[in-house]
Image (cartoon, rainbow, N blue to C red; front, side, top):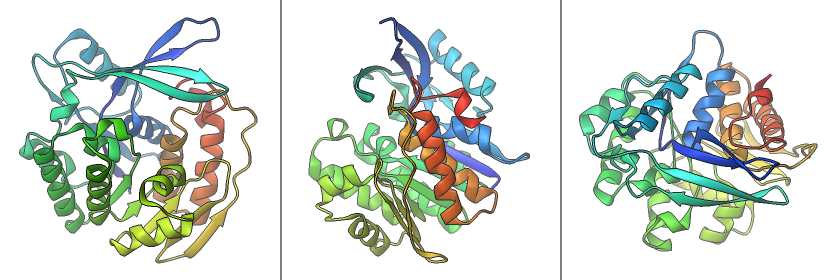
Length: 301
């Protein structure tokens, strides 16, 4: 897996500092994963991002930041009279909450141009997308995105999906749940969080979450579970459990799951077993939540 594409929305991030002011950055679930992947992938591997941005100054600054970070931008669409979304992090005892401004986000139109999307996925070894990717686009574009990903899977790409459910982005709980399961049907690897899946789908335990996604065709399911036991299953390695070590300090849980996804995929790309990849992913996530903001440069050192 040397040619990876991540699909979704990157936003302006306003992250709180210890002095009460804010630091401006750029982040978003699938972009966070791409950012960490760019630092973790073996030499010769590439990671690109697919989204849509505006033609304004802040959109240009975002693209410049991606390129400096080692994330390719060659397939990103630019749409006039649109811009990028913004979110602000609020922290309480290390747990984060968000306020969003994304009404004019160009990323809402990321799947509107099927030809551009097809060109972006062509020849990829692995493609990552999320429930947020699905939530921000309209119903017709969701269908386009799933069709294109299904075609890419048939062509040999591994499709990785993080359900990453944010109910406020969806018209209803029912639409969200239905769409998440449709996305799982085109995916080889599903990377859910049990606190979300258990609540939405009524799963009694992580094993039930695994069974539900595997019943829809996912070969590998890794269930993140905060500080509790991680449960996984793959066709090659069977059932796996892993107890992550607690983080030395919980400062900001932003990008905990995104960095886990990146650590897992990067380790698999190096040819490591799923069991070892989970261990590396959990260790990376623990380092990320010990610092402020989504993107922690020291975490990959």
